[in-house]
Image (cartoon, rainbow, N blue to C red; front, top):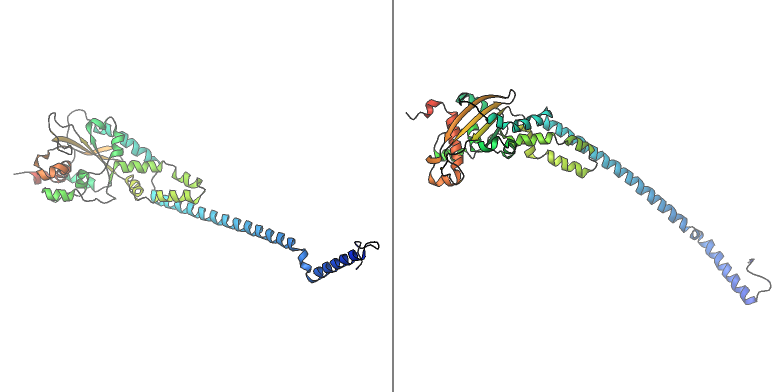
Length: 317
């Protein structure tokens, strides 16, 4: 086989070895012509793999963006449904109401009752906010009292009056749960106002990741929020103020003692006091077995029963 590797001057043995090597190489390339291009195939496969990965990443990203936008739209639609026609001004008005409890409770001149049991019953049938506090605190920190407010036995028994004044009947009555659309603590309305002012829509629009939207959705689906937003639709406020007990009077275990209560019903649309009453409570009638834990609650439920009855029904004669 001719080759520049073979010369006429090289030894015969060397020439034979070189020729044998060249013939073997020629046979190898003739029988396996593809062996010279494996790297080209490998590079092509790697390029295809990179391209496929890029395409998959683009498709996955676009799909995740679609899912995020669908979730965002669903949250905003649910927000609109939950808030309904509640304007942002509700937040300001309910806070102003809470801060103004002291002005409602402040009285100058002689006291006079306003309204009767029938008017009270009609007012209790409307969606109502309730707050109760001590006279010593209400003028100094009415907003704190509003944020701490809960529904107690007085509110519950006014909304759903007990059948009679037997202690067992009152105990059952004060554990009932009024309709969610009827009675709310003022603290719930404040929570609803805080939510309206929290920039929820802005947070939803700015959220970039599904995890952020999931947290916002969970917040919107909280049952407590539904009650809070419902409280913002209240039409009437019931404010109850406990006057200080007489000096030297010993309190029961839960703090109850003979004292005076003042109650106001305020129409929230007009800001006008439409019903008010001054009443006395005294736990002396409660049995020993109940006074330890239920003295204040029983006094409150008894008062509610009396307020909802016509005067003739309470006349002992």
